Structures are given as C-alpha cells and as structure tokens.
Length: 147
Image 1 (cartoon, rainbow, N blue to C red):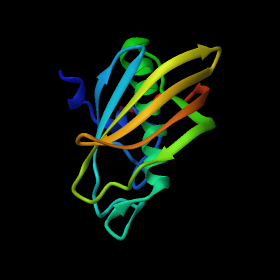
Image 2: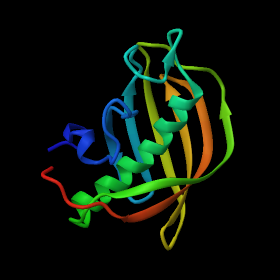
Image 3: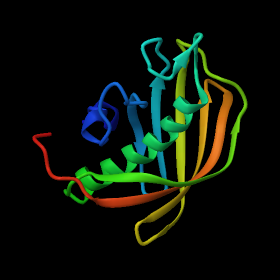
Image 4: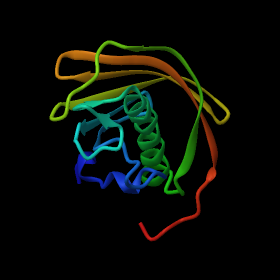
C-alpha cells in the first residue's frame, strides 16, 4: 500500500469539518509531507482563498499526520494528540486560491521528551506560501478505535 492511499482520518485526531490535510505523501523520522487541495467547502476558505488560520492548521495537522503514522504504523500504538506549544517566525507570502494544491513539509529539528520542534514550509506549485517553526507537545495516547 502506498502511504498516500492511507485514509488521513486514520492518522488524525481531528474529524470533519476540521480536517485540513488531504493525504500524507512522505514520512520518515526527519520529514513528513502532506498534499491538500484547497476547496471552497473548507471552513477556512474565504473569498476564494484559504485564510492564514487554515494554513496554520494545515501545518499543525501535517505534524499530526506524521505523529499518527509513526504511532499507528510503526509503533503499532494508539494515535497521540499533539497540541501547538509555540509558533515562531510565522510568515505568509500569499494566500492560496481554491483549486491550488498545497504541499506542506515539516522537518523535525529536535525532539525532547514529549516536545517536538519542526520547521515547516507550505508551497502551491513552485510558490512558497508560508513558513514557520512550530513546537508540538504530545498528549497521552488516545483510546483505540475501530480504525
């Protein structure tokens, strides 16, 4: 099975309508990448563009998809919820339009106990949309479900 064939709902604690990533396309312990089409049905799309809130949540959920994949498919454990601990150097270069596809990459810089520091970039095609550093704090594992 290709990693992009995994239903993103299996990797995230969030559920509709608050899912801000389409699919996980790459995972290793240093890098995770998601692909997300910008849709006019997204709750964070206004006036034909995804808002800064949607882009920020897309970055956080790319981290969550990475954590979910690692816990479920590598450790064979329950999904752990991540909470945004801090965001630094958040920069938006432009807002993506409906119909564009976002590619979000998070690079793990450091992991200490249950805190992870990542750098993130969001692109639409060759255009850099946003970038930041984000700290994610992991909670206790969520109870197993039927997924």
